[in-house]
Length: 108
Length: 176
Image 1 (tube, each protein chain N blue to C red):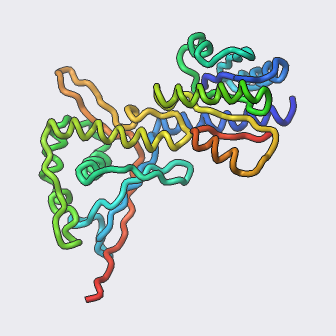
Image 2: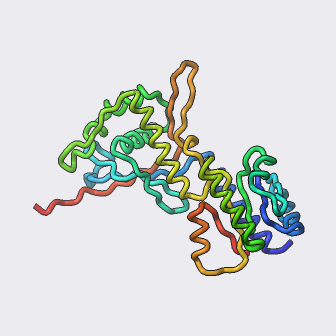
Image 3: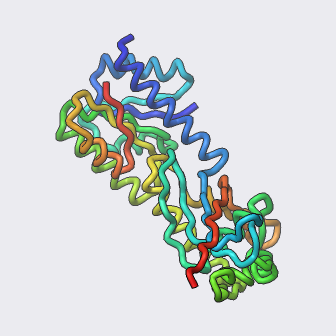
């Protein structure tokens, strides 16, 4: 069982994904759109094992969250793991850039 | 339920399984010995050439000095037994492999170890592990790989919690 935090996901898909992950015995929290990572980490204790971040919508906000997670990991250690969701394939470069930041990518 | 969400759930499950695996068993550390004599096992005279952290078939080199390579190799061999800095220093100075390290290349490349030096080297190995672990995408702390265990006294015991494999590169025949 893992502790998962969903970020930048729309309400309906967020609820569905959280339900699916809970059915696999994970504990899931959803960060409301517009909230910062600092807010999420204050609310979430312990630090989540995995953050799922949708990078394909509200791109500026998503990039801000990504930068916050990378900076948090640099300061406090390797947790949480990061899974970025992308919808459009724009060649290998975006995936390589994200992997350099310690993220994994899934295309949907 | 859409297939998109299932893909995300599957990817999440994979990542969490990887995390659980490295938390339970530790990461894979590959130690490369060179100047190995063909037909022999792991013998004194070989050199610890490189130490690599392997994750998802990708090797990240640990940038370690000679003393740190010797210490990590020793901790890898004795990883089933937590040991104090004094015990480690004694083990390193008494084991033939570390006393004759690199002899097959013509000169011995060894170091002297003391209790206080071991403690400093443990910190440096953790730093190198942190840098290499950062390149992997799994969230694992170097203090969970090179563990300090308290005792009932004021001594700490050190233990490497990793899967370790040794690879041997044969001695190159000389041309003269």
